Image 1 (spheres, rainbow, N blue to C red):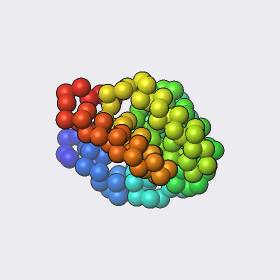
Image 2 (cartoon, rainbow, N blue to C red):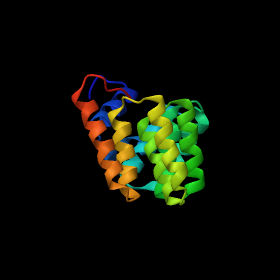
Image 3 (tube, one colour):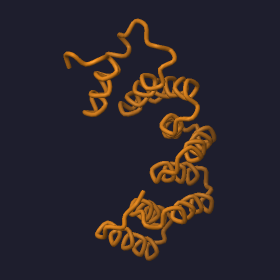
Length: 175
């Protein structure tokens, strides 16, 4: 990685999912720029991928303070908090992420949090709203199929999976 800036090195390590190396490099950095969203997010996401959720939450909270209009910060913090069992805060962060950018993965994560809270109708609404926004998204249909299966609605799940597969087989897929 000679000739690359520090940021470029971290980005290259993120690309190859070298999370241990990212944590090591960023923790060794004596003067980590306290206003750098990307470095804080990268360290937080690396801790998340290493299943070190307390550390991840610490760095991701700082990332969203630095840059409060970044979808990725709120999404990452939301899924981290879900792993920690902090469902109210996880829900709030995932809802914020969706306000900034509609994403199938954020919708699926929010639906999981809502299901863990016992709010199955609201979780289904999250999926249906996403399908209304992007009806030709195979990922959204697949996520909805998983929800239906998780709630014991197998025949509906099969139809949703078939719709997802049809979209994947066509050129009309979106997300």
